[in-house]
Length: 439
Picture 1 (cartoon, rainbow, N blue to C red):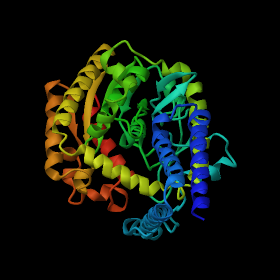
Picture 2: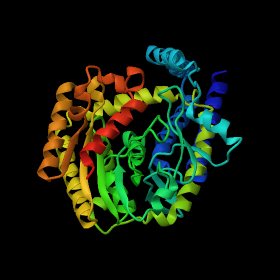
Picture 3: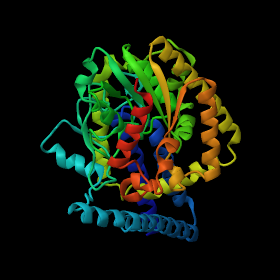
């Protein structure tokens, strides 16, 4: 029986290896090798154990098999616990109740990919959000800076519904005709807060300003973008006839995002060579094709997310990430120096483009004590502010200008809970930015 079990382990490990190889090299054509590296390691571990089992004594063989069984069962029990805990999360339960009470509607319980598969029946031009990432295009590695173009794009649900908007010709959150304007009043760059996550257009910040006195506004923000990616976005997409550039900085995670960006060889080229360009505008169709192919593969994988232990792996990744960030003072100092370099180059670009540059500091974590302690939040804020002031860039502190006036700042977030801004919150922030930047 033990030999049979060992043979089963061997067959499973061989199957696992070739399945991962198929996904990595055929489905994704080598573009996600870093992602699949851990899977390759896991398959080799299984293969090693299965071969070792044939060599072990009967007692050791039984011990190894029992240990593997209990380890696997323990992982799936933990995954089930996370699934149940997630579904019964008190914060989400409160949001569901508030949503039903306020709007008389049921909270959309589907996942993003479930919504995608449902809408796909009636609209083949629908996609889930695809964050900027490295792609392999005809054996040439590029770093995309936005989503899939000209597509109905599904984002997130923090307000009871999934935010869905049609992307423009380059994959950003704009009416496509905005690119045809002879002169642009505002160009925004930033992350998900700039993009307008979890609300529909026209409730995002740039759209609100677009509706004031018919301003021409381009929203070049996208989720998970950090300062270096945002500078790269300006290098690739900034129209020459732009009056104002609004550089949005989110204090909650932009420094962490920058840390990851500085490890990317393609993004570093923007920092080290002012003439570098990927010419992304000219290869948008190739970018779309590659992303759509990946989306289809991910959609199939989403159906088996419990088997893949997605929530358990997320917890493990958070623990590893936390340990890596301990005692990283030297790294933080280095990142601030690079942030100063990025902002210096951004200002240089704005001057060359005859555009007026504004730096907007967004807070969110400080109202919920998430990610950073109050002392860290204050320290990082003062450090960023000093860099911006040193470079003589117009500085806007949204906390001072808006949230400080509220006895309950949480009221500008969905149901008073941590997340992106509510529709009301986005409008208030947009009004403040416009009042401080208009001619």
